[in-house]
Image 1 (cartoon, rainbow, N blue to C red):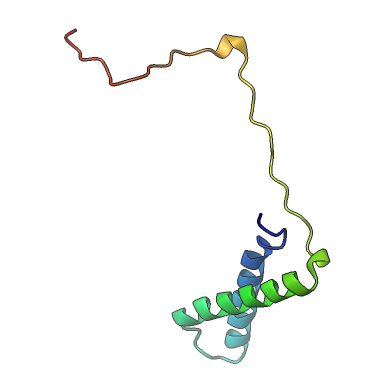
Image 2 (image 1 turned 180 degrees about the horizontal axis):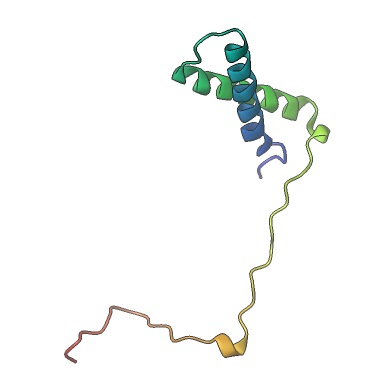
Amino acid sequence: MIPMWFPWIFVGGGLFIALSFVGAKYKDKQYRNMQFLQDFISGAIFIAFLGVLVPDIFPEFTLPVSLPSISPSDEFDLQIGPPRLVGK
């Protein structure tokens, strides 16, 4: 089972990228492409440590559990097997 703080890893990585980018522009430094990956990994590790040490601070993401229902008027033909040849 995936822990409920796991999706927050992506949020933490994005936040670290944004903060590092703003800091580099504030100091008039060039932000290199490799720094995107390094900052994302740093943010992900930070959120993972927080998730292990203090898991209650992260709200839970909820996904819809039920599938949409199909009414009887929306029926359609279902073909199983290889497609029919045109001449037959």
